[in-house]
Image 1 (cartoon, one colour):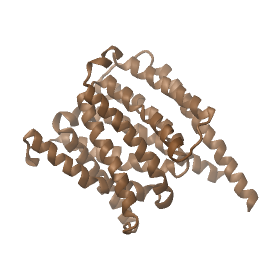
Image 2 (cartoon, helix red, strand yellow):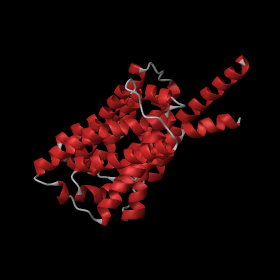
Image 3 (cartoon, one colour):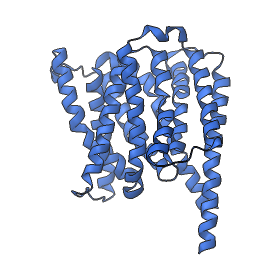
Image 4 (tube, helix red, strand yellow):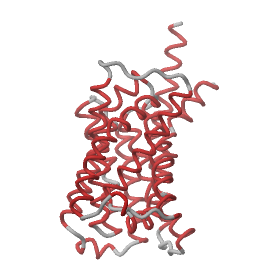
Length: 313
């Protein structure tokens, strides 16, 4: 029984990751006003990847072999595409567009999981995802004026769609690496592999803007934003996201992504004095019910697997 509880707790790790990503809404209020988006993304991943590497090194972990690096580099490509398109897209769009388009990630993940990994989309999973998605839409509708959805930049919308699909790719194609190397090594070396890619893009961005690295402002706000994005939203959150993949399918992990806008709205109210819409509690309840339905399906499956293993022994 204790083993089952432990496995279920780790399966919920992506929910904590989504909560940490919800904090990015508040932090980006500072970060995007001070540091160009791709450069901020580069600093985020460099700090996060470095922190993860320190943990791996402190635990005596081995560096990847020559045969292992191609998989990590490929995942680093997904990271680069995700961060670059998400941050630039967020800068070009308004808040309602960004929040609504970001939560398409679970949909892309479920579809990719079925197409690439052959994961089954059960009625319980589809129903839970639908309910959670409806709850997220209610939260966003109460927080933003959805009539402004058409007011943003079309290029920004396209970039956010690419970013959502890219994170789904990082999740789905990362599953074999997670199952083979563990969540910590997979998150660490995929992050480190993306650092030179994002660094090259950041250099191009600064050149295009006519800025030198020395002109990026070093203030308490910019440092705090980079540290939160690097340590919480990257190092901790990416490890927790991949930790969930050790125990549940990619399509099941995806449902926890719906919690991100709810956490962002709550933090916006607590830290920025923003008002929560009247539908926040209703949307939050729907979101919770949908996430619970999907996670309960996996819990039952896990219990069944353990019972089968015990009988075999």
